[in-house]
Length: 127
Image 1: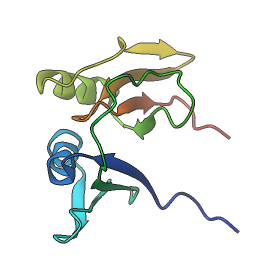
Image 2: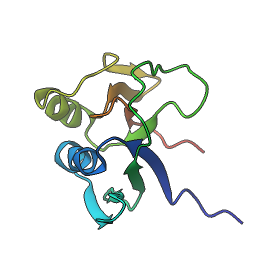
Image 3: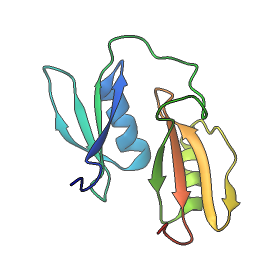
Image 4: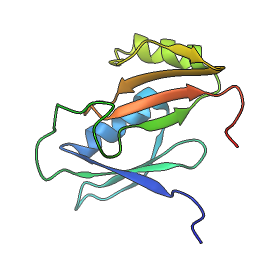
């Protein structure tokens, strides 16, 4: 039986640089790196991980929120406003304005490579 998601993978033209972006902007830690393949694993405080591997080609700058496939990674936060303000001060590119929908605070933004991320603070957890 499946227990949960262990990690999600992202291909990047510069895995080390993207991993450092997650460390500097979002407080992740690099918990594994391979010098031979440039692969990095970054971990969130709750143990969730991203595997960042070397891309085989250039970035696709045409990503949108509604294309088929995985469109964003949602990041749960305890203090939405403080996290949003800190990211904005760091020059992070936001795709939407923050909104409060049914008690949930949300905003979409991009990482260094243009991957779509989503900050969320839920009033009540989903069932």
